[in-house]
Image (cartoon, rainbow over the protein chains, first blue to last red):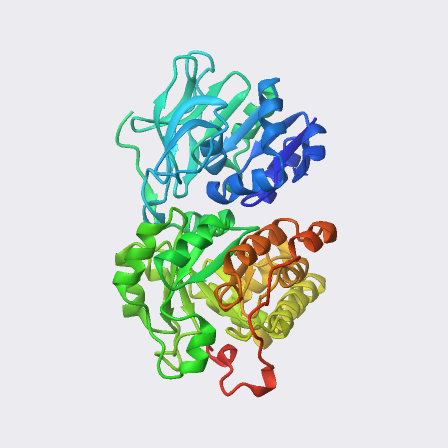
Length: 193
Length: 296
C-alpha cells in the first residue's frame, strides 16, 4: 500500500520511517499529482498556519478535499488534526479547516512549549477492544479537542479530553506517535485503510 | 479517567518541538508588526530580538536579551512558537526568558557573550535551547550541555552564505567520516572533537546528529535556502535577510516556498522572480567582528 505523507513542513520524515516499518510504501506528497497516486495519507505535526498556507500555494487543497470526500483514509497528528477539524479556536482568522472530521479543537490548548508533556493513556472503546498496554503519547504545543460530533468515535482520552478520534476513514491524534517506538497507532490506521 | 501523570520538560518534548519545525523557516523579528508579516508569510516560528544582526554589527556596543515587554508583544501577536536570544553563558537571562514562557531559547553568539568559558547548563531548564556551531565538536559540546537543536552559525548579519556553507560542510563531512570509522578510531574522534565519546558513538551508529540541525547566518535568497537544505540543513533561520531587503513580505514567502521545495529548481526559479533587492551583503574579510568565533 502506498501511504502518502504530506511533506510541506514538519515531522513528515519521521512518519515516513514508521510507515515503512509497518510494511507500507511511504510517498512524500508535495504536489496534486503525487496526491493522486496514494492509497492513504498521513498529515504530520508541524505548524498548521504554515501548512495551511502551503496547501494553497501548492494547489493541494482542492484535490485533498475531493479525495477525502471520496473516502481517502487520512491520519492527522497534531497540526494535521487541526487542519482536518471542523473548526479551530485560537488559530489565525484566515486559517481554513478541511472539515473532514466533526470535532472542534483549540490550537495550543494545553499551553505553550513549557507545558508540552508525555503521558501514558489507555486506548480502546466499544468499537475497538482495549489495548493490553497503555500508549505513551508525546504532546507538543498540542491542540485540545473541545467538541466531538455524535458520529465521531473517541479511541483515547487524557483526563477528560479526547486525544485520539476516528470518523469513518479519518483518524486524528493530538499527540505524536511518530516520535516514539510504539507502532500500534500507525498499524491501527494502516489496517483500517 | 483522571489524574494521568504528565511529564514536562523531558528531552522528548524538547527535541520534539524541533522535529515539528523541520522543513520550515524561523524568522528574526523586532516588533509585533514584523512578527505578523512573518507569520502571514508562513514562518514556522519567530525569533524575537531587539535588533537584527546587521544592525547589531553596525551599531556595536553590548547586545543583550530583549526587553520582556517587546517579547510579550510579539507573543501576543502570533500563534506560532516564539524564540528569544540569551547571551552565551548568561543563565539569568535564560531563566527570565523561561519565566516569560518563550518556546525556545537561542543561546546566541549574535549577542555579546557573558561568560568566556562556560555555556549555560541547559539541562537545568524545562524550555528547550538551540545553540550555534561552526563544527561538529562544538555541536556535540552544546548537545552534551543539553541543547535540543543545533544551528550551523554562518556569519550573522552579512547576507553572505559562504560561512554557513563552510560550517555545514564541516559538520556533515565529519559526520560522514565518523560513520566510516571503526570502533577504535571513535576514541580518537572524541578526543579530537573534544566531545563526549558516547555522542560520537551514537553518530557512528545513526549517521546523524542526535538532535535536528538547522542553518543560520547569511541566508538572503530562496536559492540560499535551497543550497543549505541540500547540504543537509533541516530548516533555516533567516535574520537580517528578510526585513533588511527591499520588500520583506514576498521575500519571506518565497524563502518559505523554497525551503519546502528545495530540490525543485523549476519552483525555485518561479519563486525567485521579482523579489526586489536582497539585503546588501558584506565580504567576510571586511568584518571587524566575526560573531561565529564567539562560543567555546
